[in-house]
Length: 410
Image (cartoon, rainbow, N blue to C red; front, side):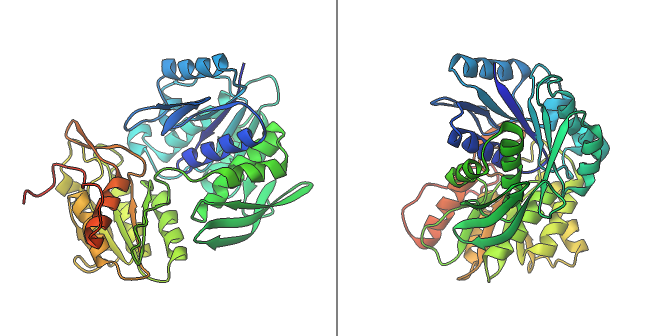
């Protein structure tokens, strides 16, 4: 009853899903969306939980059934490696499989990069055997492209930043208002603008554009309009502006690659310093603690290492492993990086350090609404925390800083 488009990858899944959703709405298709942020079914927006991946199999089918009952014709389903490895979407007949990238993440769950890549690749096996199933691949992602291209048993289309791809971007321009570029393919060339920030979002736009045009028959002009219609993604390069003389951003970057591209984008957005606040989750892939710290040591001017869902692990131990990564790349504790366990205080410290023209970016939590210490989920929103800290700094009304158990009692 539905044309289902599955979108997977390490980074960019939620953004690409929302871009494609907007494109399909612009094309006049009645479309639903299931992402790790929420489910959108007609006029209803349903919360899908705290730290969520693809919903469980019964919930996925329930959402899809509600879409059919609401008279929808298309569904965009963000599909995670956990969901694929645990067979949560095996009953879904996918018409399109869209891949963003496959980089270092979730090796605690999948054992190795190869195991992680294979889990992502399962999406190709879930494509419908009849009809015009299509695999949409990232030509620029060297680690995954050749593997997925060999694995796909259906028609393929690829996107990228060079003319080697079927659909590619040219003339990319950055501004505080977003991105502008031209999208070129066989028989078309259209200008595209988006309010999304960060050069990596060009690839996300291309993924959604290629799926719509090559896979679903949407015109290039309508696809461009759909991309322009997207107002932004909660917690993805989201600017918090209270009139301060520097830029303050919340982003979801929580993998080495995502942090790298977020910091590279931050560098393009300012002539001042880049000041980063981030952590690394407990009970998850330990190697990325070092990798993320090394990335920040190379790309940020100053880093504040802090909490990000330590769960039952020692937060001090997590920060020690991260500090080792900074030190390995020439970082100097107290100068180029600091350890501040309480995330609210780390954000405050970053803002106090900022000078006019600098950029402060808080990474890792994005849209999420809680942080886990032990077995307890504490209400936490990085956007609220950044807003609260800015209001304190500027002496203007604002929300209270959310509570975490690491807060010092004054």
